[in-house]
Length: 75
Image (cartoon, rainbow, N blue to C red):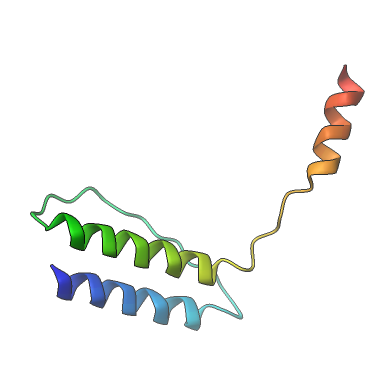
């Protein structure tokens, strides 16, 4: 299981780097049944979330001011 986690994270990092300038990355996770040690699952989840945060810098931030103006205008 540990080898799979490391392989998955490594390949995902390569995919993000490859698509950094052009293209996009779509991740679909299907439900899998496997036996794993709880500590290893937690380590994987933390590494996975850190990887996603590191490579999602191209997302646009929502403008909170325009949202509040729209709600005030409708009231």
